[in-house]
Length: 479
Image (tube, rainbow, N blue to C red; front, side):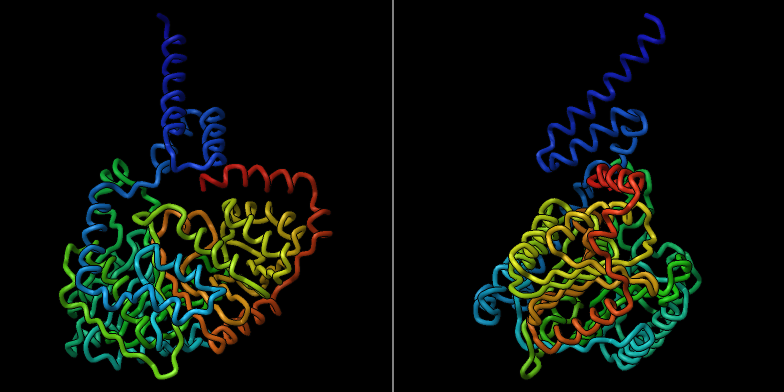
């Protein structure tokens, strides 16, 4: 047998093995299977390597088992802070109950009453209020960031934690192993530990070989959580970084949104932080402060956390439920728009039934792949009656959703496949006219700083641009 025959046999067996593996998977959508078949046939060796490294969303049996243990302990010891199903019917208007019920089905957090929230004006106010709250802390401070830079914001928060730890406050700080890799290796991180701040790394790269063999290197903790004394929590899209975002400065400023919450929803965010802390450190729930202090006249809200250890498709199904609840208006801002079929159908259906659907994306995206995929959907969205605006004053990084002037979602989730399946994300879903009005005003500010995209404009795009967008979108399920 000559080498040519051996090589052909190896080539055929390699492609066949991966094709059979793909066909055996019940969790893949037909478009994802087709995309993998195309890649494996066009570039079989490269495609096989990519599938081995990134083809399956598997965080590993050890971490899955630990996740089940962590949430088992949380439900056994802290269920009183997670809310009860009956409160959804009591607190939430009938039109929106299906979405709140679906959110509760993901990891057990139900709507709780008595919450209040303030919308931060900008990055400077967010940093000032965060530092002030940490400086006023007397018992515990917990922070978790996907990206933690050593710029003004990142340094100020680190220094505030150092001051708090030195005066006896229990401080726990956690950062993602990839997004915050420079901070984790820095002298500032070391100084935090020396001052008494307890440190942990989410999805660490300490054993890179095991990550490659048992999981995926791009499964990340994308959450942004701050909890202070069990009474205050911040939720939104801002990392521990300045708007100038030095790691990608040419797209600056990065425009984010943050809300400062008080009330029982704080305990839910505390439990979500605790789940990540327990997973990374092996510790128990002991020592994690939980309070439920309702605000008089406050609104109902609940936390929603997703990730590769939760069920597949939870995020697009949640947003599709929310979109289906919209009666009059729906406005969404997101920097990364790579929807699946469920989400696209929900958006178009809402527009067809007369809901005023408005989508706000950045004009210039830091990911050319995401930009191309997003643009491939413009024709269909505009044809259905959706309105699209492209923000031109920097990179719009705010992830917001408002419905009918009543419902708001803020947090870390983008409308892309990474947030749907690969990243740990955190969001807060709430029902309140005052807070929603404030978020809508912020969305209107984004629109005022945007350029509208109209169907005639899209129809005049040159043929090579349309082909490029659609080619990239074809492999969108693999991104």
